Length: 471
Image 1 (cartoon, helix red, strand yellow):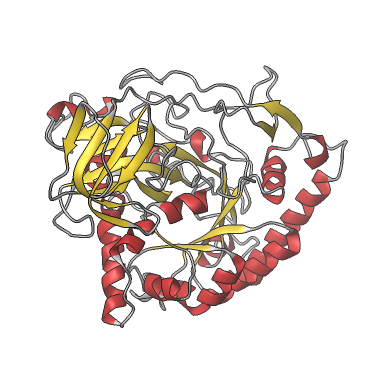
Image 2 (image 1 turned 180 degrees about the horizontal axis):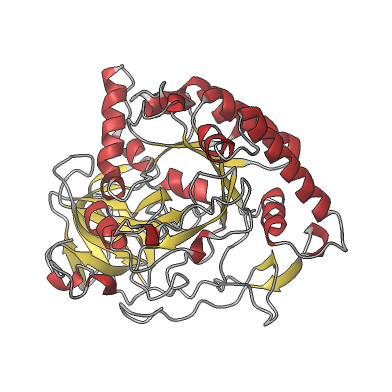
């Protein structure tokens, strides 16, 4: 139950997800949150049944050997191929080529003329399922706002797979993977979960096989307002840091005590300290982000990404040197004091510094147009003389997000062997006029704008007015 006592186990197999109703980092050092049958050994706590708790039961829907040709390809890794093609089979990318490369002979050919192909779009910051639609109090399951530190909670236990937002995110935004996070009321909000955007009866049936867990933290106004308003600690920013530091010290002591009683919260914290769980830290101000990075060094963990990070442009060099991504909006600012210094050029200035940029949603509507949000951030930079290529901008909503989530060795770019998470756009994906025409997840065609039968409707929507309409 501590670092020294963690159990070694062989990762089991992912189980079937029958059609429409059934239920790693790039550095290779982050452990899986699921039971994908990789053959690797993982350090994890086992249940009394000998299995990892709440394993992924995801298995890809059936797909076909598919060639998209001719088309403009943005590969997600900064590359662009005009008059190119993409071939995928058995759920994996087989090859990507250009006009001088002979395409394979494939029966299922999709005409990509005057269209664009990108990797599946990834949202690193979503609350779909734990703040689902309809937005009523009975559905408010994202913040366990009963203590400033709740590392024991897992957001997947709040996710409602019937949230209509999942299908909207795919049909309008080309979203194929997304991270569901707890809210930001608490300093430590609990574990996040990465999902494949597929219809399922259960959250386990959506759980991205092989993805590491994330851990949501928050600094600044939210925790001190929520708990200071109740007359308890923390009520100040210094209180935020004091509570965080003592909680980490307690977790370190737990990890060194072979006789300690099992503690769910400290298990998660030890997972962070061991590098198995990735920290996603809600933080706005530059000075606080710098302090958090120092706290992480003191306690022995790493921040994978700062979320919202409206002042990240002030410390782009520090973020680059510490290998921390900034998951940001294109232009949200001014809605509270700590967001006052947000600027539309945030992403562009970070890119100029060589720092990692991710465009996120944090919203059930913005997730449907992350491509447009990225384009807005690109345009804001161009107005200030910072010109960023379209191919690099696409990486903000594909490969960079995958890197920060620890899944870039599996998805995020159109590279042979990676998951065939693919979007065919009816025009330039950075144009406000373009929409996804087709979306494949692990090579399975799950959305087709020209086929009403492939416009998913959740069970919740059946019988509701408008069910079956374009979503």
